[in-house]
Amino acid sequence: MAAEVDHRLMQEFANGDPRAFELLYQKYKGGLYRYFIRQIGDKQLAEDLYQETWARVIKAAAGYERRAKFTTWLYRIAHNLLIDHVRALKPVELFSDAAIEEEAINDGQPCMQYAPEQLTAQGQKATILKECIALLPHVQKEAFLLNMEMGFTAVVIAEVAGAGLEAIKSRLRYATQSLKQCVEGKWQEQHNDTK
Image (cartoon, rainbow, N blue to C red):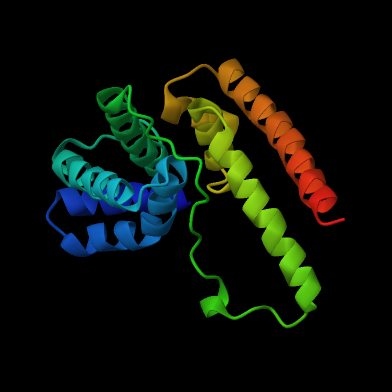
């Protein structure tokens, strides 16, 4: 049903209703911004690509045709912009290994059901996971994040990335294996250093 609502909103926007665009924007702004920030780790560049994606949605509204779900179409635009920037910036290393900042959850208030040492361990694990995600090759990182954060299936990721289904399944499998090894290794390292 959400796909029908999104399609209808795009049609309404194409017919001149700015409120329809605002509803789509509000619905997808957070996920789309996180997609860029987690892919490249540079806030300014992420913001620029994020804004350019929405500008392209606006430009394409008049010719919008329903060939896929709106989310697939939106993330395909974002994916293409990201790839264009990666190509333009080579050989400069665009993808940073630095930890990527997260938005505060629950207005920054810690959940009171956890003891401080549990919160510390969870924070350490989250930091390690972010570091390991940053180390993944771009295609694996993108597939993993679209799957885990956006809930996209391998079929949808294949449409977004313009890749075959089997390639996406392999990327997800390799990303998962790499992350497991990386997290386990870094966790062991950290605990060996504290002994």
